[in-house]
Image (cartoon, rainbow, N blue to C red; front, side, top):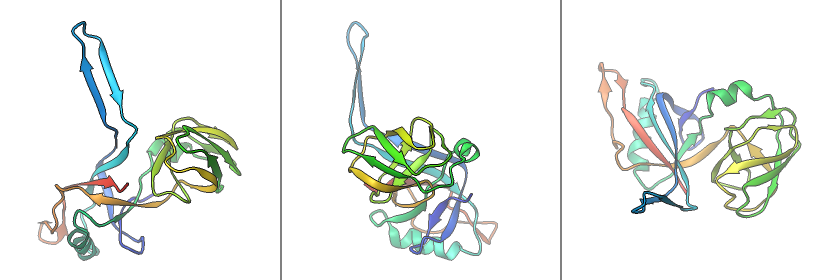
Length: 196
């Protein structure tokens, strides 16, 4: 499986390389009282962030260069979202399951699924631009827990496990090119943030 940055036609132009970090960013306010009891206030807002090296490129380096310069920090960058390696190895479902759930639900009902969709699977619903993750295993059809809670209700929509989704370059990403060894484009670590 290859994951990374795509052009506007969803063709891969730069593959993610290790180290790769997929992070959940959810605002949390933590304070300790004088008696050292911890008080935690978790906000409902959440986005996914990806930090990754990119495979040094030579043949498609020009496309990545154009992408970095023209997308800047405010235009959508198409990203083929990475799955956890354990998920890839454990998944036996090859079907196109469908999901139903209400606004703000942490569980969805899945139909038309044959096989295992393991906990930790990143999913995208057919009518969403928000990425979710399953937090429980689903073997066949039934109920599965997700994170974060549903931002938009779903009614019999396709559950995608391989998908391209909109992200933004973070402000510390170089809008240009860096070459190593004269012919290989090396952007160092690229940070992408989910476009909400």
